[in-house]
Length: 288
Image 1: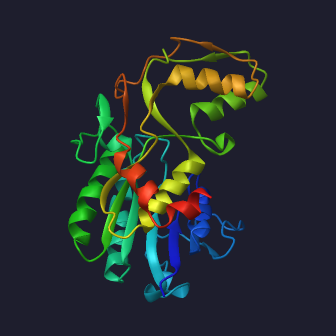
Image 2: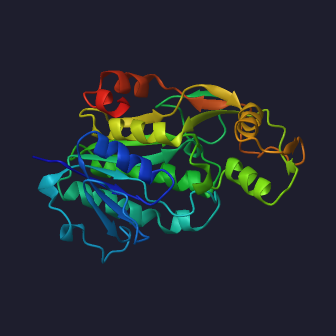
């Protein structure tokens, strides 16, 4: 019986939550992280290693015949949108994912991003045209396109397109992390944009559940938005965060310009993930 789920990037901001969600579904997680010394898995195994390193051999830890799915979250410099590492590592991600298909892994899921799409106003659907404007978005979009062709029908392949992730804010590099750090330093004012931009915010714990369900539901393939599907202004969410955390910080609206590659409002079409969460045989266990 295939009961092992490989989770790369297990030490990352999203990875820990995905490992927990996978194990809540009754699977054994093989949690792989570049940083060792921390155990992310309760029922499975934690491995220190870099899956992009050609010398790293997964066969030391599991047999392909035991693997139900791979969830590939590992990515360097995800918060630095124009880091050159995105392009330099692209072929290594391609080699790893196609290698897993070669090994006979029946389901492969990889984490994408709204930045693949580039400038877009309104809801992003699975078939929305992509025109990325950052190296991060370009690399993710190229990986999605190339692996979809190369993997073909050898494995069920799902591309999980994520949006604005919140929660567990001490471990991210988002504006919410920076607000907490500013409050720690005793700063009373926080330079801000106009705050008018609408985003699709999703809590990282809920994101972990959605990723696990989409990755492990047989037949779910192609692009799946892992998102809330609800547009909300950045100002509203940040002001609420300040209030909820009792921060003595005031936003200085307009101190920074809005980023040129951010549209006035964009969010994910959540119809597919909502259907998966409602109908998946795993959804009941995950939401318990």
